[in-house]
Length: 77
Image (cartoon, rainbow, N blue to C red; front, side):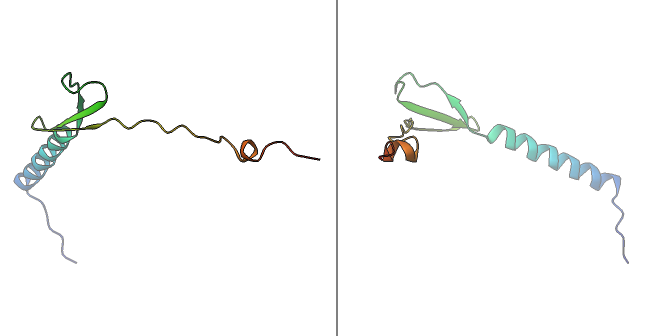
């Protein structure tokens, strides 16, 4: 069986690359921003301080029937 022993330099490079990847992921996640120009009906996100996207806010759906019993009604008989 062959074992590869990591040198101290290779270990340091690996840890630095992992830290850099973690920092990039933290900075690249979308963050909500306020857009006074578009109004309250729009929702905007900025990704990595560069790309900004806006979309209309999704309205919450209001159920017409809560349960099956409400839809059928009271028992007859």
